[in-house]
Length: 63
Image (cartoon, rainbow, N blue to C red; front, top):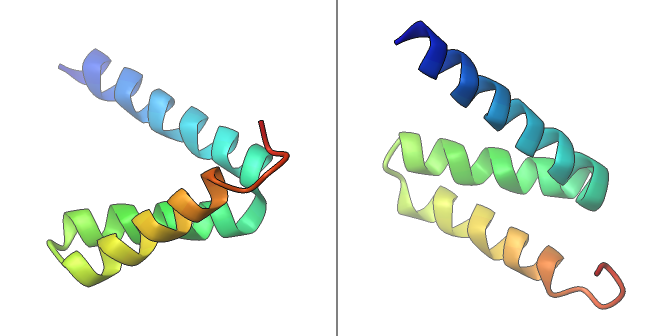
């Protein structure tokens, strides 16, 4: 069980670093808003985070 938690934590930190590298500070803020909204079961916060991430993904020239 601790091994699974360690692997998941490593994956989460790696994904956050990838988002920070590719999308900058706004990507990290959007990811934090999305995760807080999901954990707190707050659809407004999760929706804002998801919309910002979607807008960052749709930017021209980021691919």
